[in-house]
Image (tube, rainbow, N blue to C red; front, top):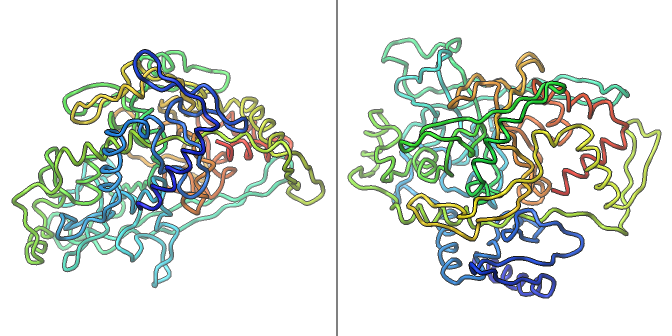
Length: 507
């Protein structure tokens, strides 16, 4: 890790020859020039890395302040450190570190797509699953003895709460010009429940179960998201009404820590902060001041953990350490948008091989950006937002003014939208309510950094549960308020569709 940090610092020295910056009256660095083939995505938090470490770099304002860099490095260490039984992991958990699910601060390839020795897809066999499994009754009530999340991993000698099994169903479709594409829908079942519900002889009735699976989100732009001017989001909601396209976004209001306000974080904008404390507790089973009880409190895993030497008489991570992790997340840089080469040429073929088109990379991306607007994607994936003057505040009250007063380009309105229930009979409706968000409502996914997911994490699984295997499938899963844009995309000439995909790869 430290060798990599030194390498990144060397790269920043090289970039100083290209980037001209100065400090304003508040001592905040303002970038005045950028490389001609890049566009700032997040103001002073923009970085210029494109390889496997593209998501895991300090923002310039972190590097330029020694105290910030020390704290970022400390939070980075806690983020990557693997918890063990001796340091508080378990008794049950989903991942053994933040990075086990967010490899390179991205989206670790989920076990949903990993076949185990029995030939099934689901929870995996390597100590983590890189996903969260939400379980609830059909009336929204949690199951006794399980809580809201099924923890499918456990320390040695302790039974996991259950295991997820995924059956993939595939269906073929055609675009108007005849191009064939397929969509896959996951059907989830839970096996190996650790206990029968209600201590009866009958297991949980599958007909009473709703199961929603979430794979990790990219940790790109987390600090900027927390610094966003909430009033701007509320104004977007007030005018997010485009009846001609069936679009009407709204804020998800939630109560956290006694505060009732709009949520920005999470697949359904169901959180007001970056959920560091919840991540330590629910994902790793590490107790802390906000969540002092074990996640399996009152379950038999507590006794099994005691037999394996676990002690439950102290908190396992301090608030100061968690705020360092919070600082790390806020301090991550956002990859600059890449405009493409003006000389390197790219050839795409029509789906049936009957035609080819060769253009420079930049020409493809520029045409794709025009197609993005033509398909009205920008009505939800809003290109430009602003952060409030004071920036962001960490979980213990530390203020980060360096994030304030910035123009950012997340390609999201951070509102929730009805994404439909019709495709393959289910659409994107997971029947799981979060705050005001219903099962068919999802926060508009920020697109910045999405084009580098393959480089960072080695896969292109998108949407909340990774069912989309590429950009086109992700688009074609759009229903409800996304239906009009999907149809506008589907009716495009094949060149425009390829160009739009090139544009997404440039973000």
